[in-house]
Image (cartoon, rainbow, N blue to C red):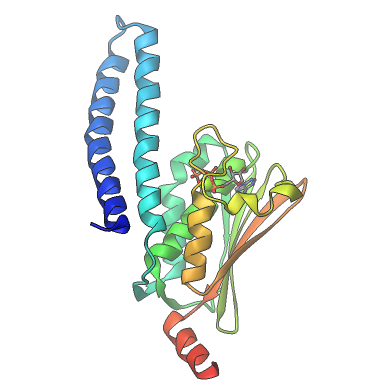
Length: 229
Ligand SMILES: Nc1ncnc2c1ncn2[C@@H]1O[C@H](COP(=O)(O)OP(=O)(O)OP(=O)(O)O)[C@@H](O)[C@H]1O
Ligand SMILES: [Mg+2]
C-alpha cells in the first residue's frame, strides 16, 4: 500500500467506525431526552459526545473530498440544484430567522460541469452565509451568465472578514467557529480550480459577498483552451 492508499484506508475506517457511534448515540440521546428521571449532566455529556462524533465523521469526509481530483462532467440544471440546496438547509435558515432571496439569470440553461463539485462549493458558501448572517436578515443568492461563464454569488449581512484573514480563510483547518472544521472554503477553492473556475469575496462592515465563477461547459472550455495553447 502506498501513502495515498493508506490514507484512503484510514479515512474509510474512521468513517465506518464513526457511523455506528453516531447512530447509537442518537438512539441513546432520544431515549434520554424522553425520560425526565435521567440527570442533566448525563444528557449534556451525551449531546457533547454526539457533536464530537459528528465532527470526527465530517473530518474524515472532508479529507476524503480533498483527495478527489478527477472530474465527473454531466449536464444538470443549476437553478434546480440551488433550490434543492436551499431546501436542504431550510431548517438551519429558520433557526437563524433568516430569509433567502433568489435572483436567477434565466439565460442559464443546463450546465455541463462536475455537478458534485459545483454542489459542494455552493453548499459550503451558502452554509457559511447562514452561519455568518445577522439574526433575521436576508441572504441573497444570485446567478449571472457572462459569455460562456457563470457567476454564482451569495451575499449576507454580517461581520466583516478582516483584511488580514483574506487568504487564511481558504487554508485547510482555518476556522473561527466552535464547531467548524475549517475545511469548507479549502475544499471549495480546490474544487473551483478543478472546474477551471475561481472563488473570491468582498467583505465590509455591512456585508460579505462570496463569488464563485466557472465555465458553463467544462468540456468546451477545455477543448478551446487546448486549441489556444
Ligand atoms: N460569509 C462569511 N462571513 C464571514 N466570515 C466568513 C464567511 N464565510 C467564511 N467565513 C470565515 O471563514 C472561515 C473559514 O470558513 P470555512 O467554510 O472554510 O470553515 P468553517 O465554516 O469555519 O467550518 P466548516 O465549513 O468546515 O464547517 C470561517 O470560520 C469564518 O471565519
Ligand atoms: Mg464553512
